[in-house]
Image 1 (cartoon, rainbow, N blue to C red):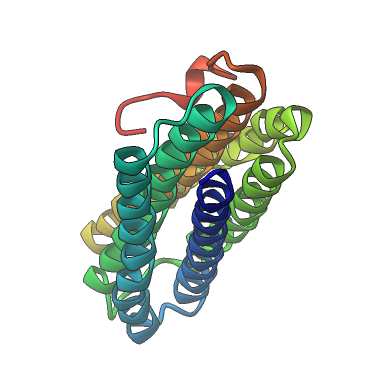
Image 2: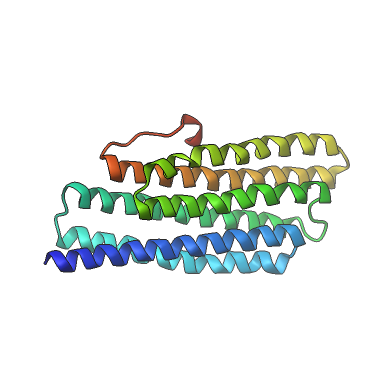
Length: 224
């Protein structure tokens, strides 16, 4: 019975890592869509979300079945609960990619000004890195690496604030102002991906220590 239980835990954790890979791919395609202002690629990001959702549902259903058939305690219970939360954070990351893709399609064919497009790549690259660090730290049960997500997140927060300043500097006509508003919202979506990565790091710390704590209050605003 114990062997069967551990096998299922391992399977679910592998599914979770696979879901993270899909989320990272969705984010990269989202960034490529922003860079190229490609509405077709944005549409692919939206459609690709079905694959992330399928993984999310598989993990969620697997955890539900595991809890119904078994009565995990101590570390095993913490692992199950951590996976449940991480699964949700990954799904939210994918949803943020979809939100960006939808906004990008809505402002075509005019698109974003070149001055704003270049601002997204540094944020997105850091968000991609944070997904990897978050999931690697979870896999290795490495609290120190999980805590490093806070510093990584600071760059995204800084670039998000800079985006608003760049938009104010643009000025321009009504069309430019609309594009600027979309850019702020899209930037905010990437910021939320970083926040969700920090949340995953917190789940790693909970799994290892048995005590939940927030790494930083700033990572838990509305809609986290």
